[in-house]
Image (cartoon, rainbow, N blue to C red; front, side):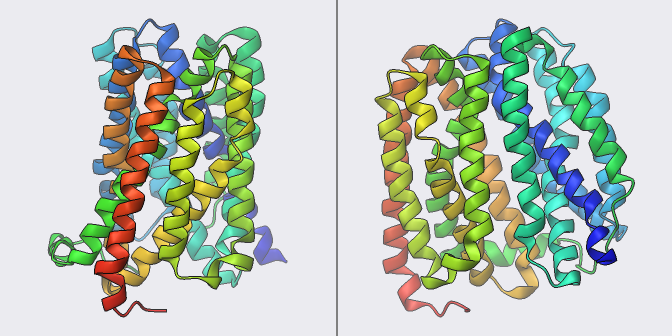
Length: 387
């Protein structure tokens, strides 16, 4: 029991970090609109995050491997989060917002991955499921979206820095109490990535995944603006995220019961079909409640897709290159697709409407689903996948 008690700071870290993450993901587009930025400009700012993460993830990951510590790197990143978020929220011009946004994101984007990495290793040490620790991140995300949505709806989105710093300080306090683990993996080497680049099955799978994740990342960036375009408030944006993340937590928590029944590619294809249907239906929305009522589909689409795609990548690449392979997968899922989604999504919102944006997302997701099916026919049937 004492061993499990040592997980409390880690669970609190995941809870508090994901609570800060909600505030940025859910309300930053609304805050930037309040500052006077248009859809295209908001897209530029939101694209900075994924761009920074492509550089930040391997940089902090390498330092973690080099100095054999996750805890100390987390401590540096959380301190960076507090310092640079304070400066970021003081900026008013597009150039200064983008510049400070890049510095701010450089410290904040790796915290989720490092926290998950620590949780995975601690779960292995204790012989418990990773989901039982990671669920606290989803709970933090959902709780924050609901409470902060109500607060900002009452007082105004311009005050979003205060709840952000509140949860940030909790993260700083608990990270000092987190139990570190010995990092045994070798640092990522450039020649390792070269081996992966020659793996045609891996590259084609990433390309197909890119089409599915672009729609997902577009929704992350613009669902808040879409709900307000349809007449919703900050509180309703919070409710929308709450509904989505609660179902995501349920999917992660129950994965042990349903996940092993079929090949992971089957789940990726099913999630792709549901993504396409979901975005086309969102495009027809005429009220914010319609969108919020369908947010339970977030768990079924993202939860299933993320779990299955990550598992398939793990099977597809040699054990020696797993950390590198996961890094490349994360760069595609959260980085490249985030940049494409933010830039193109902002321009579509500006020149057309939120409804048009969701129709485009539905079409792009359909292309991704067809690509996964073609991939299954071309590669998977002729390939022995490790079970």
